[in-house]
Image (cartoon, rainbow, N blue to C red; front, side):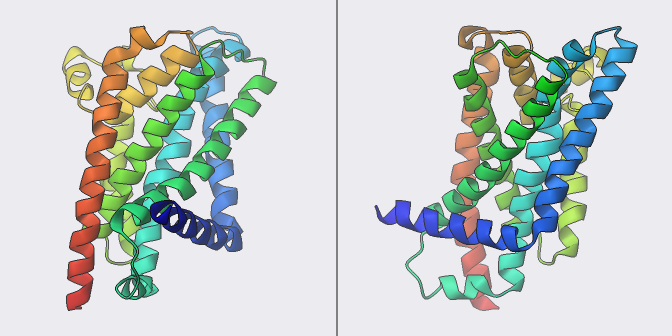
Length: 257
């Protein structure tokens, strides 16, 4: 119960802060929708697909590459940095809050945002006639693994590399944008040369994108996605462990400042 209460308290505080700054939530809604429409129209025109078929392919990639990436990875980096700048971390020194609860609180808060974006993206895609026949439970599992992975990476970047708000955009661009392109979020992986495909197998975004497309666009089952699911489970677990160590190291650094 202790961890549960602490996690909910952290998540609630982050969500309240975001609700007070409504601009971020508005932009996190506008950006994936604009990317979805652009991807959908390009696929429909260039691949000679109906708009419904194009949206079925564009929605998973848009969710992974435009929605969850910037809200969960970029958002978690910004959250940690703002905590630092507002001296909130100093108050943690006199509280019994554990690193696990703090990480989980950030995860829960950004999961709420990510799930809201998922519903928005698929509602718009469905309005164009897209029909998603894959397992809802499997799709949600992939989305949650993606959120854990993104929040974990963002947490590590925010605690170890970012010191000021200005650092956030540079970090997200330097680490994230190449991974997005290599993961097939903006360009179909079918266009990649063999060498890039081999490198992409080490990219979590590639596995998120491929797994979600196969589930919700092609109706694949769990057994057919084992390599992607196993990679995401392992990566998410590593991010949780690394996030805990990053939190402990950040606290030790902040105590000396």
